[in-house]
Image 1 (spheres, rainbow, N blue to C red):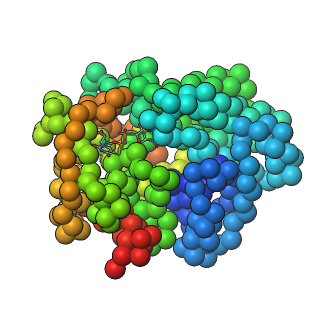
Image 2 (image 1 turned 30 degrees about the horizontal axis):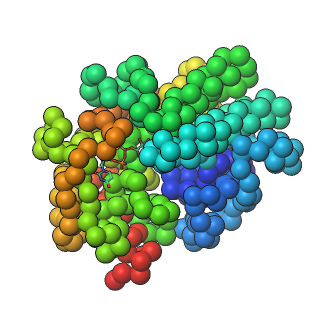
Length: 341
Ligand code: WQD
C-alpha cells in the first residue's frame, strides 16, 4: 500500500483528511506533537474507517527527531503537511513561536525530502495570504498581500520556501492548497473541531454558545460594506476540503501535475456573512443563539470568497456539502462531545 505521512494528522483538518486517505486505500502515518489536539482522535479515526494507523509524537521543528523519523520510515511516498500553530490572535502575541514552529518545521521536512528521496508534498495554506483582495472573487492569480498577522505571514513565507526549494530541486513536486474557512465535522460526529480554550473561530464559538459553554457570541462588527454589515467569508465543509487533499496527493503520485509547484483555492465560491451563518445555524438546529454586536476585531478583513473554477476544472473537485448540512454537522459534533441529547 502507498504510505502517506500526514503531519498534524490529529488536528481538525488533518484528522478528516486521514479518514479520506484511508477510505481511498492509502496507508497513513501521522506525526503530531499533540500541542493542539487529543490522542483520542486516533481511535476515533479507526472507529470510522476500521483501519489502523501509525502515529509518532514529536515536533517537526526538532531537526534531529525529524531526520531520525525519516531514517526509520523509508516507504513514505508523499507528505501532507498540516502541522503548524494556527491561532491568528495568538500569533500577534508570540510571533517568534509562530515563525520558529511554522517555518522551521517545513524546512526540516524539505531537508528530509531531499535527503531521503521523498518527492511529493501537499502544503496546507490559507486564503489569508490574499489579505483583503481588491477584487472578488479571488482566483489563484489574485496578488498575495501582506498578511494581517504573523500566522498569515508564515503561510505566505512557507509558500515561498516551498516554491523556491522545488525550483532549485526539480525532483520535488508540491501543491499548496489555500483553504477558505473550513467548518463542520465528519457525519459520524466522531471527529470535529475541538479548539483548546476559548475558540478563536466563528463556528466553534457558535456551537459552544449553543451548548451553553459560552454566555453569548460576540459578532465583531456590523459596519462593513456587506449585505448586512457583518463580515463575509467563504465557509467550506471540512470533509469536502479533506477530499481535495486526496485528489492533490493522487495528482502528484500519478505525475499529473503541470508544474513542479502548483496552487489551488479550496472554497465553495459563495460568501456568507456572520449574521447569515448565525441565522442558518438557528434555522437548522432550532437553537436560539445569544449574540451581541461588538467593535471589529483587529486584523479582520471585510469580505472574501473564492473563484473555484481552477480547482473545479484542474482537480475535478467541487465542494458539495451545503451550509445548513455543514452547520448541523458542527452542532452534532458539539452535542456528542458535551454529551447533550
Ligand atoms: C470568521 C468571521 C470574524 C469569531 C482565520 C484564519 C484562517 C483560518 C480560519 C486556520 C470573521 C467573525 C469570529 C467570533 C465573530 N485559520 N467572528 N465572532 O478570521 O476568517 O480566518 O481562521 O486555519 O487562515 O485567517 O476565521 O472563524 O476567526 O472568523 O464575529 O467569536 O467570523 O470577525 O468575520 P477568519 P474566524
